Amino acid sequence: MATIVQYVIDAVSLGGLYALAALGIGFIFGVMRLINFAYGEYITYAAYALVVPTSAQVAEKLIGNWPAPLMVAAIVAITMALAVATERAAFRPLRGADPATLLISSFAVSYLLQNVILLVHSGRPKSVNIGAGLTEPVGLLGFRVPLNDLVTIVVCLLMLAALAAFLKRTSYGVQMRAASENFLMARFLGIRGDTIISLAFAISGLLAAVVSLLVVIKNGVLDFRMGVPFVLVAFVATVIGGMGSLLGAATGGFLIGFITVLLQAFLPQQLRPARDAFVFGLIVLILLLRPQGLLQPRSAKERV
Image (tube, rainbow, N blue to C red; front, side, top):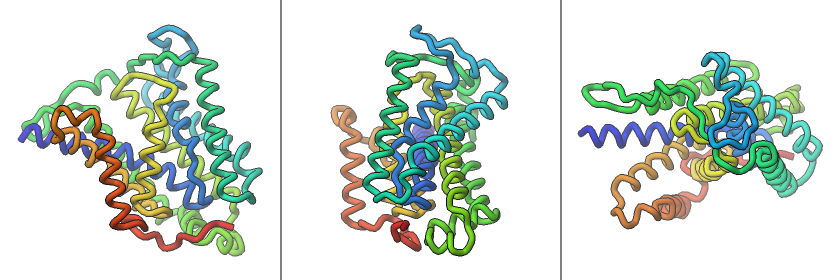
């Protein structure tokens, strides 16, 4: 029973991270019909903002030495500013271009940001130690589970609830939903497109910062490619959840998290190194059975 409880907690924890990452992709896709592959670098930059540039194996902390609330606020602000800056510099001038051009631009931004990290910090992984107290196991219903997994689950659920409330109960949230349904008509009705798109990028940066901090607290390692796996999983989760559906993106993220943990737990030992192959094989099967995604969005129209 203890093992089953641990598997469930691991699956919900990992699925929550993937769901938040998928929403970071989904918010931008909803209003721009753009898969922003630079999103992985937002996650990486949020982590590297904790440290001073150094070639040492153990990085010297800067923001990581601040009190926790101030540290979280600083990381979130930096990542949101980075996301909005990339939208202003790389995507807004190309807004009238075809989707392929915007996609190439997102790859260019991704590689640019990745190489800036290499230039400043080098490619050597760095170790940091934040939230050390969260690594201890705690008692839960008679079981001992890692506190950082519980924190990850709680934070992810709170973020999902906050985003749902934002979309349903705030003026900007309603405008964003309208823009995702029909961007051109929303602009005719008076919604300011630049503001909504910048807000979508800012929310994407916020989600990237949260994912990054939760990952760093759990692993304690910084790597210039650390955001790449998350952006790939987020993209896949968005596709299998239903392109344009935020609920579908979150559902896809949780589904991939559960599949990953279950395969890691029940695959034979000799097949576990090939776990990701089985994960994506199951995803291909899901798409063959339901190519439109798990949840059909109300509108799949391309923005013009």
